[in-house]
Structures are given as structure tokens and as C-alpha cells.
Length: 106
Image (cartoon, rainbow, N blue to C red; front, side, top):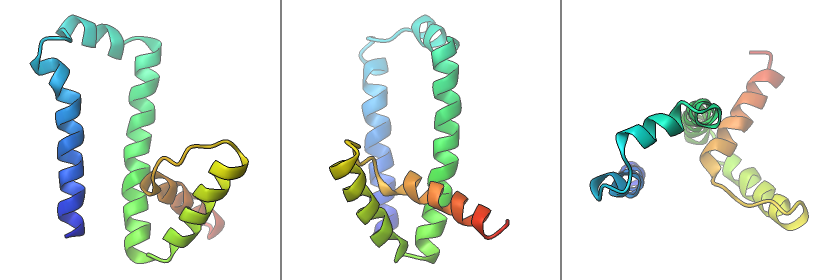
């Protein structure tokens, strides 16, 4: 069931992203201009890193689901005291996995 929910979430995200293309609101030249600008290239690189961290987060949460308690608590603290916005557990778990790996010495 969890895998189905994840796949449905990705499907709806992709549909939401593709709607402007289907309605001709976005042209190929505009896409090219946006992606190959300095901001666009940074965004592409950051999203690649985010996707990798998300994958590592799924691995960590699959192996240690109890980590979710720390992620939720951290999200509450970050939102309450540091004016943060909760963005989701997958990338946060990926960042945690990276720090755990560094702490354990690879």
C-alpha cells in the first residue's frame, strides 16, 4: 500500500507539472531559456541532490522507521522556534542518513 501511495503521489506531481505544457502555456524555447540560465542550472543540480537524498531517506526509513519520530520532532521544533516550514520527511531523512554515515566514518 505504501508503494502504491508513493507512486500515486509521483503521478499527480508529474501531471501537475505537465499541465502547462499540454495547454501550450510554456514553449520549448522558454524551457530552454529557463533551464540553461544560471538559476536554472543551480535548480537542476539542487533537485538532483534532493532526489538522491530522498532515495537515501527512503532507505533509512525502511531500515529504521523509528527515525521518523526524530524527524517529526525536529520539524515541530524547526517550525515553532526557527520560523521554518516543514517540507517532508524523505529529504530530511536523506540528510540524516548522510550525517549518520559521516558520524560512523563511512
